Amino acid sequence: MLGDNTSDQIAESNGTVLVTNGVLVDGTAGDPVPNAGVVIENERITDVGPVEGLDVPDDIEEIDVGGQTIMPGLVEAHTHMSQYKELNPVKGKFRAFTFDNTIEYNALKAAENLEKMLATGATTIRDMAGRDLLPMSLRDAVEDGTIVGPRVNPTGPMITSTGGSDDNREAFRADENLSNGREANGKAGIVREVREMFKAGATHVKLEGTGSWLSAFSGPHTQTLSQAEMEAAVEEAHRKDMTVAIHAQGNEAIKAAARAGVDTIEHGNFADEEALRLIEENGSKLNPTLTPFNEFAKNAETCDLTEQHLADLEADRKASEKSFQLALEMDTPMFLGADSYPPLGLHEGGTAREARYWVEYGADPKFTIEHATRESAKALERDDEIGTLETGKYGDLLVVDGRPHEDIDDLRPEQMSIVMKGGTVVKRRDTAA
Ligand SMILES: [Zn+2]
Image (tube, rainbow, N blue to C red; front, side, top):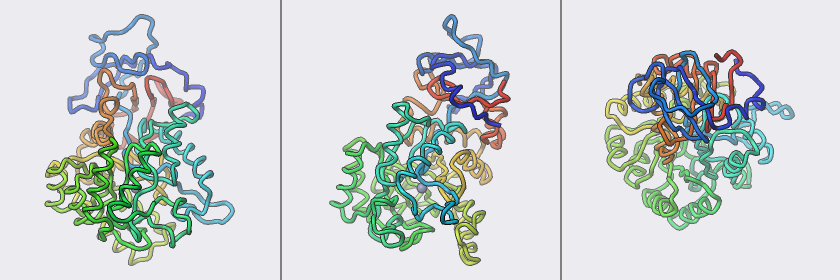
């Protein structure tokens, strides 16, 4: 099991190290390389490949991984760090979507979540909306060393139309700024919110293009933003060098988003052949998030689901499985993010669980790993610095006890022997070689 001596390990190797004697799965489409190593100097990879050909500086610290697998750190492309599942000790119920806690408490829980996610292999995350400007603060606190965590790509609250997916104003509380959504309507209203996100330091904006399963007002098939509103967001965000992600489950919203040039389609559960073709033609990418439909049913009690809910859920899960398999067949550009949020369980290990669903639905394990690393890095537009183990990129890597590229179960948190961020060991399993 993972050790709890993280702080003792933080300084280990200090950004310059040789990781050697492993099976290298570098995140590119190439074959695994036996007896390989990675040289990292000042946080960046300076050489990688078969051990005998490596250019190794004198006196470099060496970590011999004894034949375990060396792979890139996971790039978890869809998470919500300021949401969590926990029994409220005072009120005796789960704190989740209801936000019956303070934003300050959320911040502390988010810091805890970040450390756990890093320790279980996510060296970069994209936060897909949180309360107010909390995700930007998390990014800054990690970067200045205040807290330990993955590299954070943040956005603020989701931009939702009135009655859209994350309009929680009347459903939960009057103060919209304390929910995960910010209401905006019409092109001017949307552009204003995009500019607010830019001002606050977001790397991307998140639009709510349909309702969702737990929305108060609109369901997953209801389109909640017009194509013109989506286009306005894309034009403004791209002008500010930010990407645009959209929550889009129903088919019509997916098509509108692809036509509007939205960079990443999140969920896309009911995409048909035409929608998948439009995604590819317009340069969008799909993140299928297989976790929620699968995990809601397992948390039926917590989620207060009735028999009818469960039947509807299973029908939607089946439809999304078919759509994912069609995307595999059509070679639709995809990447991987679990959408780990309450009440679907803890953040740590969420990426591995999502990867398992990909494989269960028919994806190859090595292909899946490449989508949780290289392709996710591309979706974040950070593939010049993370996502594969190649010269010039950050030394963000995992030493895995097993062969996750052959058996995806080996990606589980329990199998992580070493997690390294920028050439520094941030977690070492007690039993590591
Ligand atoms: Zn989400």
